[in-house]
Each structure stands twice: as structure tokens, then as C-alpha cells.
Length: 245
Ligand code: B12
Image (cartoon, rainbow, N blue to C red; front, top):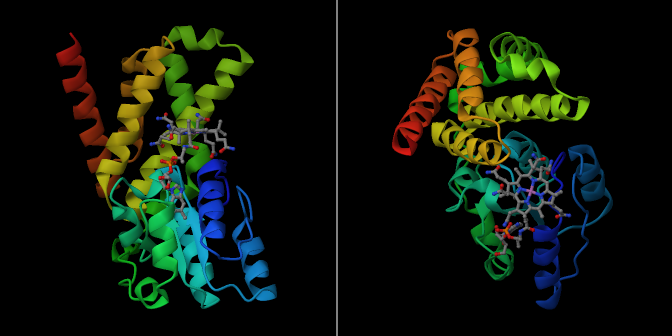
């Protein structure tokens, strides 16, 4: 899907499907929904296999799933992004396979693919997800300003360090937004745990992440579901630093 560069896993799935006798067109990584729709209009596809490695891309995955549904083409999804047990695929109303052989079996059974219960996204009516996405740029700006005020070392960052800080601030928001989209705070807490591990291995202290989470929590205090996910991640950070200390 759009913004997803992990091409190897779907490439492997494509090759396994080919070996099982299917005629496969590999559309590649980072395919905009409009391109998929135009492909489906021009070709008589029997199924679409959609890969997602990053949970933060799940809202985009849903757009692709809906595009297939509108074209009446069954869709099978897979990849780490849907959760180890595929739980977020179920939330988005898509058939999920854990690996390529299972995908081949599922695609062969069109009725099983179409039998999946519809998406359960009634919680989106609270508008938290949409508001967060609308305010993304402004939130990244304010988090960067806050970080510069509180952590003086960040003021001397090189252009490259600044670039990766902005991208991390964006990933935090995108993961929070995705967790609101599927209404599962654990998506966000797992992401924060992973981010802290990566940053501490690069010499950035966990306290810098904690400061940013506190900033987002203050700015987003009127968003109950976002506040809950932020509070859970902050509590996780505190207990991790206690056990490390
Ligand atoms: C290679 C790699 C990359 C390469 C991808 C190159 C390419 N052309 O594919 C590059 C460098 C581009 C990359 C970038 C990033 N990556 Co990366 N990447 C990986 C890595 C090391 C391997 C992925 C892979 O190919 N795995 C092999 C496949 C076969 O295994 P699999 O994904 O588990 O797939 C199995 C199942 O999930 C399933 N499956 C997979 N896809 C599908 C699809 C369908 C339809 C079906 C049915 C089944 C299915 O079947 C497979 C076989 O059993 C993983 C870590 C890892 N060990 O997996 C990180 C990983 C996926 N990346 C990660 C991250 C964070 C990123 C970046 C955000 C890093 C950054 N800060 O910039 C960017 C994001 C880029 C983007 N916008 O997409 C994280 C994701 C963590 C998270 N929870 O969000 C991971 C897990 C690494 C980590 N632990 O830190 N990455």
C-alpha cells in the first residue's frame, strides 16, 4: 500500500502463489489506492493480496481493502502490520493469512475470503482519528519546539539528526493514529516499546521519548482514547526504567 516499502514479504507471497499455479501480477511496494483501482478496472483480477509490515500504515491498508471491495474483488491480507495473530485484519473486515502457503489455500476458497465479518469501526464516529491526522503537522512542530526547550542537546542537532527526530515524532503520531483507527491501545504501547529500544541503542535516552509522550498527552487531553493510549505507554516506560534501574 501507499508508503509501505517492505517489498520482499509480498514478493515471496507472489512467488509462492505463482508456484501454486496462479497467474500473478506483482504491483510492487508503495502502490497508491488510485493505481490499484485503475488496475482492477483494466484487468479481471480474481483476488488481491495486500501486504502491510508496519501497523502505523493500517488506515492506508483499510483504504486499499475498501477499494478492492468497491471493485468487488476479494482481498487477502498479511504481514506483521496486521498483528501476529491478524487481529487488526479482523477489525478492518479483511481475510488474513499468516504466511504464503496459507494465503494460497485461502485464495483458492473464494467463499471463505468473502465470508469475513464486516469491519468494526464504529468508534471512528468520535472523530479523534480524523482530528489527529488533520493536526499532524502542527503537533510535530509543537513537539519539536518542546523538545528543544527541555533537552538543550537537541538544539545543536545536525540536519540529519533533526531529520530523523522529525520522522520519529511523525511515526509516534502515525502509530497513535493507527491505534485510534483500530481502537487498540496495545498497537501504540508496542510501538513505543520498540522505539525506545531503537533510540536507546543509538544513545538517545528513554526520557526524551517520555517527554514527547507527555507533550502529546497535554496537547491531546480532550481526546479520551488518545489520552488512554498515551497514559498506558507512559506507565510502561516508567515501569521499564524502574526494572532497568
Ligand atoms: C528489510 C526491512 C526493511 C527494508 C525493506 C526492503 C524491501 N525492499 O523489502 C527497508 C530498509 C526499506 C525498511 C524500512 C523500514 N522499516 Co523495515 N524491516 C525490514 C526487515 C529487516 C525484514 C522484512 C522482511 O523482508 N522480512 C521477511 C518476511 C518474509 O517476513 P515477514 O515480514 O514476517 O513475512 C511473513 C508473514 O508476515 C507473512 N506475510 C508477509 N507479508 C504478507 C502479505 C500477504 C498478502 C500474506 C498473506 C502474508 C504475508 O508471510 C511471510 C512469510 O511467513 C524487518 C524485520 C524482520 N526481521 O522482519 C524490518 C521491520 C519490518 N521494519 C521496521 C521499520 C520500523 C521500518 C522503518 C519505519 C524504519 C525507519 N525508521 O525508517 C522503515 C519504513 C519504510 C516504509 N515506509 O515502509 C520494523 C517494524 C516495527 C513496527 N512494529 O512497526 C521491523 C519489524 C524491524 C524492527 N523490529 O525494528 N525495512
